[in-house]
Image (tube, helix red, strand yellow):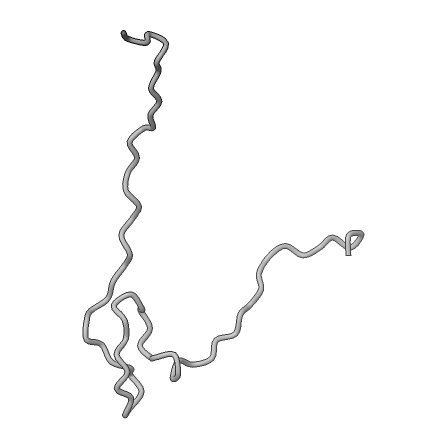
Amino acid sequence: MRDESLSLRGATVRALPRRNRTWSTGRVCAQEGCVTRISIYNRAKYCWAHEPVQYYIARGRKKRPEAA
């Protein structure tokens, strides 16, 4: 016996997410004497120990004088 009230649901076909960007294989830290290999997913020239310090600059809206 067939149930005529049976309904099926589905989802639309979506595009796949973009692939991760990669860089060349076999890269080594640019610091002289360092032999640390850099991941293909890391675009930096230096390893974590030799990466120059970068300070975060907060950007955003300033609070209005009456809200501060």
